[in-house]
Length: 118
Image (cartoon, rainbow, N blue to C red; front, side, top):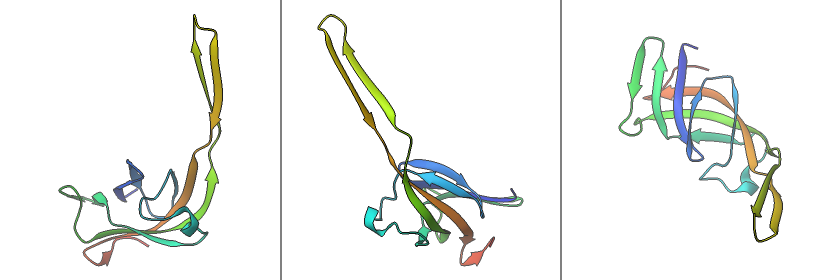
């Protein structure tokens, strides 16, 4: 927990640590066909890096900061049920939706070409 980074991907911000895995809805730069298992990814949209006692904050992103990782697998999340009803019109509509999700693991965080963790 000494080293972590806050990254922006898939329209949300995540606090990531090396060696842990995370689920995100989509990678903006990758096609769904390219999301095979063990595909290496580099994330350049790093907002903040904490290395033990020092904190580096970007404006809006840090320059020369990279979060390296690899994709474990793609999967569908649990189905959500959407139910729409107009009360006095006798209209009811029910349908479901499953979001595509990708699980990836963070291998290392680097700043200015120096790897902070492996």
